[in-house]
Each structure stands twice: as structure tokens, then as C-alpha cells.
Amino acid sequence: MSQATGRLASIATRRAAGERCGIASICSAHPLVVEAALRHGKTRGADVLIEATCNQVNHEGGYTGMTPGEFRRFVETIAGKAGFPLDRLVLGGDHLGPNPWKHLPAPEAMEKAARMVDAYAEAGFTKIHLDASMGCAGEGAAPPDATIAARAAELAEVAEAAVERTGGTRPVYVIGTEVPVPGGAQEAMDHLAVTTPEAAGETVRIHRDAFSRRRLDQAFSRAIGVVVQPGVEFGNAEVIGYRPERARALAGTLRDLPQFVFEAHSTDYQPSAALSALVDDGFAILKVGPWLTFALREALYGLGHIADILVPDPSRESLPAAMERVMLAAPGNWKCYYHGSEAEQRIERHFSYSDRIRYYWPASAARQAVNALMQALGERDIPSPLISQYLGRLDSAVASGSVTPKARELLIAGVTDVLDIYASATG
Image 1 (cartoon, rainbow, N blue to C red):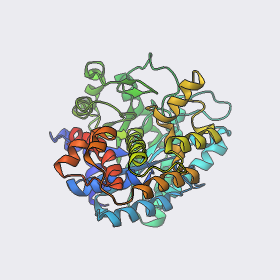
Image 2 (image 1 turned 180 degrees about the horizontal axis):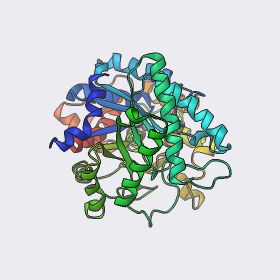
Image 3 (image 1 turned 135 degrees about the horizontal axis):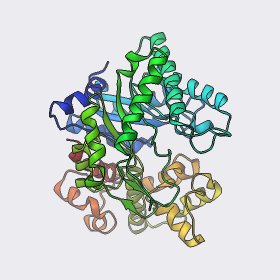
Image 4 (image 1 turned 135 degrees about the vertical axis):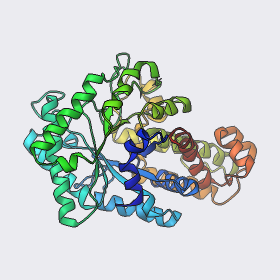
């Protein structure tokens, strides 16, 4: 077990002993986001947890085209270039279950989910979030909690067998039945409910029983986290902030669950004080993804304006125009999320907090547009007044000398600005 995985495995024990501890879970496959996270961790001497989701990376390739083994090599290659020590890296699999194949009958979907989990475990991912909370063909939105737990235990058995076969590190697990849908909210958020203490306790009980029925008690002893809803979420233009008083009873249940901390999803765009309060209340694993690529997109679009001033070229397509063309050509990743008039949808495609544009950066046309922008700016120093005008959040960091005023470093700095908020909150 790596030192970082060992520290993650002991997070509940450390918290119970009075240590203020938490960790941000970086949920992104964008190479610049991964690089920013690893450089940030190196600078701070901190562990870095990077997670891939079931839709993003799986044995069939996912939307990134990467298998778990390929994703691991992708991250470790960036770590090598950044000089980040691998014993501080934890790789996780997020929402591992039948979700990518929920259109199939449950036996077929679970067979594919099992193959995916096997691939993650074989590749050495040491944090596994088991999520069988979605209904498969003919089952409705969600199966009963007991079925969810039984399917999670079935997948844990696959992971344990894979580690036994390969001689790798046995993973820690995260469980939960009140799990946000991968990819973000698709409905109005005026009815967002905090998980009840009773539901959190029942989740642990039914999963413990399901694991025990498969003689996986030792595996369950490595379950460290329960996914719950603390009352945070974001949509296209709104953010529901954490209100500790609403989650006080839920947070109190951790006194009766000394093995666990809570894992909070959709913590993007929360104020720093809210993130700190979440950690104080036992929501020690904070998922963040869209906010990181949102910050990256902000920096890219800002650099686009700067390029138009410094190196004007009528033949160079603007980055927003290129991305609009890419998204309209393949609307599958945003159509169900963005509603309203054509004008409203256009704004959401580029500027929504849900950041569905993140699915399009790997497209060849998008890569070409970004490359053209970066080549236009090259290694020139960006004048301070233009940084102030178009990359205002980074102005003070450039002025202090902590960020070099070059295009690529400004992109990294845009992501790092968000990572700093999580570092402050998690300690």
C-alpha cells in the first residue's frame, strides 16, 4: 500500500483522533487539469487523489477512449514530467457500476460493470466507489436499497479477486445509495433534500450485510466513505451552498459510524468557508471536477481575447466559434442538460456551471483550435494590463511573481486558483 493510500485508509481514524483532515478528489481527465493538480500537490508536499468515472474511463474505453490501465499510464506520465512522487498519488474509480450500460437488462449491465471493476482493480486503482444505485432496463429510476447493496458487494468481490490475482494493493471502498447521477443535475434543484441520519445508518447496515453474505467482511473493513447528500449542488447558473445547520443531524451520525467519513459530490463552486465547514462536519472527501475545467475554459477564452489584440489574424477561427461548431455537431453531451430558447442554450453551452463543454475538449477540431491559439501566443510574456482585463482572477498572482505571464502557465494558474481553495478547506 502506498503511503498516500495508507493515509486515505486511515482518514476516519485520524479524524476521530482530532486531526483536521480532508482531501479533494480531482475528477477530470483533462491533461492540463491533471498537470495542475500534480504540480499543486508537489508544491504543497501533499497527497493527490485523482478519480476517473465509469463513463469517462472503462474497459471499453469510455468517452476518453482510455481503459483504466491507459488512464493510469496517462496520469503517471504527467506525474513524471511534473516531478510528482508516485507514493503520494491515489487513483480512484468513481461511480463504478452499471451506469454506462443501464439501458441493458440488469444481468447484462452487471456483467459489463464487473469487467470494468476488474480492469480498475487490475490496473492498481486503490479507491473504489461502488455505485449500483441506478436502475437498469425495466427497473425504473432506482432499484431497492437492498438490491443496490447486493450489486455493490458483487462488484467488490470482483475487485478483491482481481487484486488477489495480480498481487496488488487491496483497495479502500466508498459506498452509498443516495448517490448523485454522474455528470451533474438534470432537474430543478428547488427540492434538494439532505440525507437523513436514518438513511445514512441504513446504507452502512445493508452494505455490511451484503458484503458479509459474500464473506467479504475483510473487504468491508476497508470501506472508508459513505456518499450522502449534505445539501450542496449546482446547476447551469445557480449554486446551492452548504448550510451546516441543515446537515447537523446527518453529521452527528458519524459518532456512531467510527469507520467512516462522508464523501460529498458536486462540491464545485462552493465558497471557501462552505468547503471548510463541510470538512469540519465530516464530509472529508470533496469531489470537484466541473469547476476545474470551468476555470480552464475561462482562461482559454480570456487568452483568446488577448491573442486577438496581440496577434490579430482574421484567418484564425475564434475558440468560442470553434467550440460552438464542435458542440452543435455532436449535441449528445449537452442536449438533455440545457433548455430554453436557442439564445439561452448557446450561453449555457459555453458558460454553464455544469460545464458540459468539458466533454468536447478532446475532439480533434477543439484540439486544433486550442493549439492554434497557443501557437499564436507562443512564449511571449502577456502584458499585465491585458491579464487584468481578461484574466482578472490571476492578476495578483502574476503581479507577485508566483505565476509567469505566459499562456500555458496562465492556463495552469487558472486551475490552481480553484485547487488553492480546496487546499485551504481540507487542510
